[in-house]
Length: 603
Image (tube, rainbow, N blue to C red; front, side):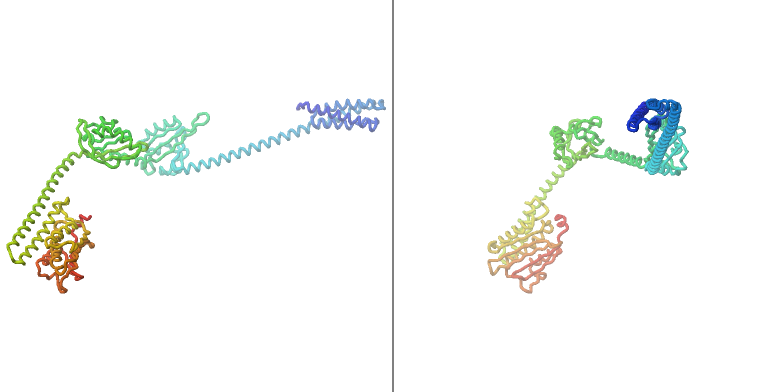
């Protein structure tokens, strides 16, 4: 039975007070004629319904006392007194019955509420359990999907016997098995037999630590082996008890091949550097030597251990020794290079203090944030000595060649003078003319040797200057003024080699002599034009004047004069051809192929 709170008893008291007040009002308006018990019974019912058995009994006592008080105050008190026990009994019975019924209903209602609350609680707990189970199943499916779709091979092992509890598809594919074939087997079965002792050591160390990584050799279903990295993790519960071990496997065949290739390449590069005939020196951005190959050791006389970490300027004489650090700092701040990426000849200093010339080529490279400079050095002492000997020999040959040209020119001038003296001993004008023409031919050849003697180029003749000089000599020979017979020279060809210049000079001498001798007999005014240009692979020499010209039926190829026969002979020697045009004077065109040497010089 539940003890009701004091508020229920207060309600019973309040209900009794209200009922008493109502009776007073009824007595006032209706008069005191009978003892009306219904309001008191209503107070008992309200109190019992709200407070239960004890509250109803309390209200019964209160209302019984109140009703008795009203009964004592009625006019027929003797009659009422006679039925007092009946009224008391009836009222008491009603009060006890109502209180008992109210208590019973109260208990049933409370039981129903408790049952409803328990049902709601069970339903909530069930819904929560279902939701948690669904969430767990969803997460399990997600983890299973991630587990199976992972690109890395993953396995889960039992902490007691190290047998496989779960493996993903990548692990099965890596080892050439199906997932079903692997489940329940010891993890060591995928390890190569020769590596299982080492594998056992590693797995024991992994079980004692939370995370552990090691390399081993695994074997596939077909017996092939491959290197593998294993990352093993121990999973424990909240009490520190090991639940299982997880292992992630990575096939490092490609990495091992790359490492082997890098190692091989490094060994090859080291072999190249170590066996290079040139000294190879590497310094850092502060100028400190980081590598020094054997050729550099032989070149400078230092062992690698002696120079490692030293400033590279110990290999330099003055002024390079004092200037090096400042130059390196200047380059790093401005990027202005004097040697880096360019190379030049410098002087080196050996361990014994002797100096020697060397070729130095410096390149810059970066390894991450580390800047390095590599210098390749070569002792050029022998080359410098050879160059000096070659220069001296060349100077001797140049002097000798100049002397040859000078002597040939002098001999030709002597021949010209002899011809001139011989012409003075004859009165035959035809003979004198022949001597003059021969002297002109000799002079044309002597002029070539004279120009070569005075030129820096001992093998080629510059055409423009030669033509002008030859014309001036012929003008003097034939006593012609260049103000009356004007000369125009256009020569747009490279310098001529000697074997081409001499026949071309003789041809020019004959053609210009003909112009001056025969072209202007009837006039003292006119012009001569000499043009020389290239036409594809040919050279074209044109001599034209506005004199009297050749006879209309004249054929230069059948000429009887010695001069024109000489022109034809020399043209054949040059593998060329002669053309004659009649166009307000005489126009002679010589076309001959450009020589191969000429093409090489042009290139």
